[in-house]
Amino acid sequence: MVKASIIWLNYNSSNFIDIALMSIDSVLNLDFDDYEVVVVDNASSDGSFQRIKRYIDERKPGSIKVKYVVSDVNRGYAGGMNLGWEAKDPESKYVAFLNNDLIVEQQSLRRTIDFMEGDETLAAANGLIYMRDGKRIFSAGGFGSEHWSFGNICYSAFEHECPGIDKAHHVTYAVGTYAVVKVNAISKACPNGRPFIDETFLYLDDNLLGLMLWNKGYKVAYIPVRAGIHFEGLSTKIPGVGLYYVNRASTACINTLKNEILCP
Image (cartoon, rainbow, N blue to C red; front, top):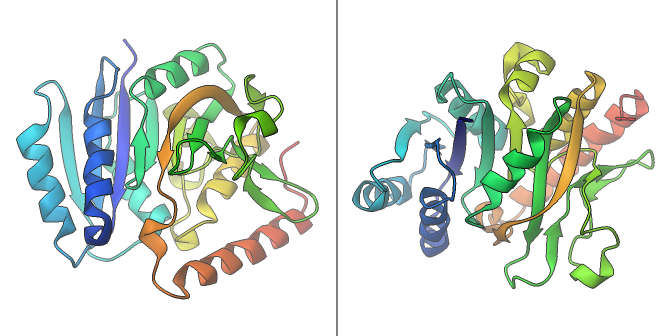
């Protein structure tokens, strides 16, 4: 039986607590036989973690194991997910990284892992993620080009505007909003056996993970599985903060591409 760990990251979600609770509820009710949930709180100061923990303790199915990891400081996406990685069950073959503003489709984890089981070189994947209206696409995988651009494939498009969306295809990176990875591939390909570099903090993390995997001989793919609905940007609404980290990540990606380490 394949075992999986889901790392669900929270930070100051009181302003969208209804979405966060819907997100964790969807995680607790996945159609998958053997998984655990690792809830990481990035030093929230708004009481959201306490409310989420109370919700989980009252509602989680008895078959689901939940672990709580509380950081002493806000470590961003990269550092927070790395904390969850260190707390995962050592027997987990797969790990899913999940934002707290994404509502998961019930069968998405099972169908994604079933697909990944068919290819030992496939190290990371994501399915079809929709925007909050449930109609437009947030991501059909992540791309990186030699023209120094990174982004979500078919972002803001409707399905009929996105050619090939019904077929699996290779992508530069799996989008960190909801990405599934193989533990053994991460352990072999990434520094210190952890998926992310703490210093990237936000936005650059999933891009670099994809590049590292490709450059170690692994593959990353988009899988035509309905993955979930993403309420984009709820965690980064502080004025100027999101823009700063986007520009910071873009500059780092440009320098990365100049050094010619983009995946083939």
